[in-house]
Amino acid sequence: MKFNLSRDVSPMPKPSSDLGPARFSHPNDLDRKRIERALAKRARYRYVSPRVLPETKGYRIESPCCSRNIDADGGIIDVALIEYDDRDRTWSLYRKDHQARKWELYSQHTRLAELLDHLNIDPERKIWQ
Image (cartoon, rainbow, N blue to C red):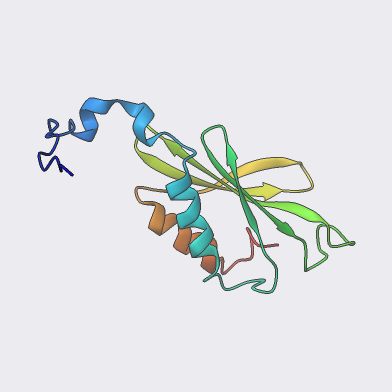
């Protein structure tokens, strides 16, 4: 029995800036999982299980409505929209205005972790309604 102990030595991959925007485009599974893990640490409505869904430039969070403020039957409602702007390299957090049925910009951040802190704390109850 013969073993080939030689390794295929490939050239090092190019730095991410040379790979173009497609490599880290949004949505992607890595950031979706980061958002899901962060939501487990939220301050409000910890007894429901929100879902993180891919959107065109980011992620949409939906959850059963436990407060019954938006949906008296406790149905699934939109909670937040997270978008990444490749050009400005910023994250935007949107809250849902359920009466007007539209997304409103809530805050902008340079890091996803900062945005997730705002999403989880929500002291004014603007996001987790």
